[in-house]
Image (cartoon, rainbow, N blue to C red):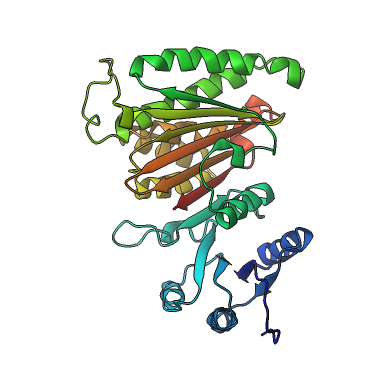
Amino acid sequence: MSNTDTINLDSVIDVQNEHYRTELVALFKSCAMNTIVAEGDKTIDEIKFLAKNGCKHSLYITDKIDEKKLTQHESIPAIKLENLLLVDDETKDQIIDSNGLMKFEHVLSCNQDHVPHLQLMNTIRKIRETKYFGVDKCVSYGAYVHRYVLSHSDQRQWFRDALFEFVIGLSSVLGRPTDAYAQFAVEVQEELLMNAIWDANPKLQEVDRRVPIALLPQETVQVEWSFDGTHLAIGVRDSFGSFSKPTIYKYLKFLFASEKKSMIRLQQEAAGAGLGLFMVLERLSSLIVTVAPQKSTEVIAVLNLSTSPKAFSKKQRSFQFFSV
């Protein structure tokens, strides 16, 4: 434990996976961020010491689920902890409690055996700045963001055509045809819009989706696109904050499914549950879900346009969840 009176702490790392731990320490050091590495019961002692010495807000990062420890964290009123869980194949089955609620307010996962650095830094930036919404957090700094508002279900056709033309136009930037990317992007956006217009709105969940519907001002959907030269981010935000947390578990199961048969079975389950977005997850580089309960849900899909469309299902994919 440190003996200094003043601590400029950025994070407490309680990670068993040695490879993860080494990467995290090196990554934070490269960004001039201070860390304390603590495991087991020492974690609580370190946090209490920090609170005693004036630390008001800290990030707690772990790769395991210890409900007793989380309860102890809550019993230290002098410090606010943002709990971030690094999910892997071992912990994906444990992130939801018996009541169907997430045990962690922030979740970051990846289907590879190392920490996804860019996504991790984006996650930390959001937590530190308490600015969670917007596709600008998911692309390189300075990338232009196209912002729109959908107020009628019929406008989905305009959004399909406009996004398709937008991605086709990126062929001059990438130096190759972008027809396949454009089709993937349109399909992803359509699923996001369907979820935001009908699934998120309690009044419209049982409405025939073939019937055009005008949205009330408080029901409108915000849409954003951004491209930074490599990544295309598509964001859709509703005004209800009703994203189902058990659905997150289904996404994680798909993320870590390694056998083709398992993926097909999970896709069939998802289709039966009306989770169309689940079926296009394998085309994405990242899926970021941010929920302000009863207020707003934003889902951002990120496609890596430097990857061949044929290799989409084999590439690294990450999933992030924020409850704010």
